[in-house]
Image (cartoon, rainbow, N blue to C red):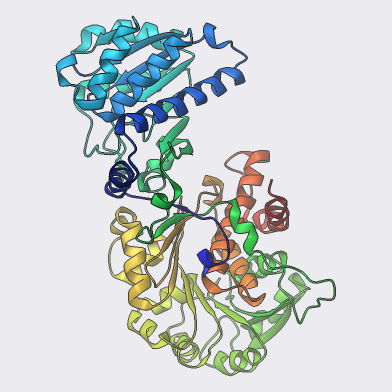
Length: 530
């Protein structure tokens, strides 16, 4: 499995889990809570230094506006303000709480900041709005420390109005731990939240940095351990992870004497009239991901055209002029004798009789199987057949939210509102690896682990990119990569290829075919740790 291969994988936690980690570190390791707050502040100060350096501005010339609330997040912000003031920066703090509302470590940092002679104004209505606008106009950096990971629901209307002003400012915004207005466990935003360029979070990243609207509001997420010992951050009960560039260690090694046989044989069952492009994109991606021999099973009436379009693949026609039917099973079964992996679905069409073929595959073929696109839509008519696969071989499902909704018998909105929980529940129920595609793709394993993918961008929201992902995962399976790792590699490199294209074209205008072509470059950059 992926975490047993000497790969450092970063865990992702809920707000409650992070509090428990901090409490254990305080209780068992003897770290004072005030020291954790101080270390968090120093990490933010370091990032302020970095941002000012990028703007070629001396530290003592910089102006920083800090917004704080009454909780520990506000305490972090006040400690940041104190350190920046001591360093000679022009700092102004706006507090949404009076002095008497601060408690514990936050109250101490309130007093310490006052003792430095720092500027602090309490916001108790709209009368401070003009002053805030002037500060935002002059600021080189804005610090958001209003709410932390304990926040739930909608921002109070007063704070919401000021957040709108903050978001309109030109200066970069650093959110402390999580942007105010974003729920730490779900990434949900009600109406308004801080739109940060960077979020500096502590200990471990939070689920809300990756789920829901969280990625849009958090910007670049930077993680600082704030001196919590590593053993507290690697507890076995933490089962959600974010993929990192460390995944490069799991890339299969090409041997000097390797050949197409040793680089794996994979079968791609795909294509129907009007949808041959999906089959070709999946096939191209498999080839670009290093598969040794790609065997495509397609409708007989389309085989010649597909053969001409994708010369590197071997193409096997099964009975059917426009789409595959139940006669495809004999061809698939014959090809499977010497194959290492099988993918079904891109551009397949939704002939109801093909359900019998999928049933035969699930019952009889021990090799790893990927079901995608129309294969999932066919299975959605009788999702109970997924239970037939249990114990017969690895199964990977790669739905987008609409396909997941059909499989689960719910609405797309329900899927999007419960992406992580639903993916894990169905992975366990179906004993399958679920790759739920989206702004942050989730890879859920039947043992209860989940992996969140940070690569990719909105440019992937175009036809055919899902087919590319299927082809890539097929190639990694064929090359002997363990199924969960193959799914993670495919998703990470697929997103990375899109990120390389975004660097050239922005978030629109590149095609699925170009994503497939970029896969070897993504792999190369990952291998070189760039």
